[in-house]
Length: 227
Image 1 (cartoon, rainbow, N blue to C red):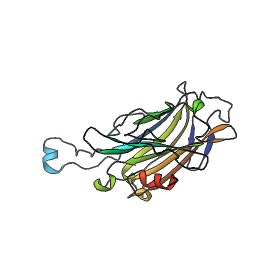
Image 2 (cartoon, helix red, strand yellow; image 1 turned 30 degrees about the vertical axis):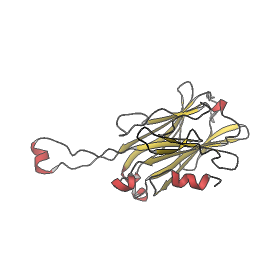
Image 3 (tube, rainbow, N blue to C red; image 1 turned 90 degrees about the vertical axis):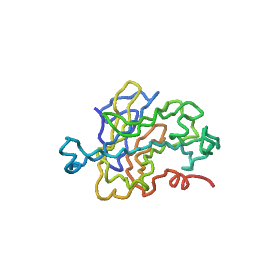
């Protein structure tokens, strides 16, 4: 049975306290969320035509940062030109996000970008071949950001049932960390959700749940670089 974590709790990913062992050859980090539903209708005409008030779409993005033994992102990748002529940085580096979805090693990748959070289950997934990760990577930090959250006045205080979970290669859920928006998350547009790190030859998973006002993971990334 999976462990429901609380903020700050750490577990061993390989086996739990009951002696159950997990296959870490491939680990899926699943993230999900629901947008808090409005209770009201769209006024007189909404009631007349039976239309519920439409909810805004929230585009939450999962990010993974690979850190070395100094707790830094060593490879920031390169800058490329997009099809529309824009410059995109952090390409094929140690940051996995919507513009660079697969690490050059092939051992960690983002499956896709869900722009609404609609439906049950994981809204985004990051797949990791933990057993094949190079020893130079000592930690993987997971963030979630609300795209254009500041501009659209969208924040984690409006998000319900946000979670991050780890699932092993056999489909067994190892652990899950959940949180729901409250007043402490008002105005917070990104979240350092959890981390996986090496210790004594094992991989550990720690629930973090620290919110940030910025809607860009780059602001946190700057604190984790050598430059």
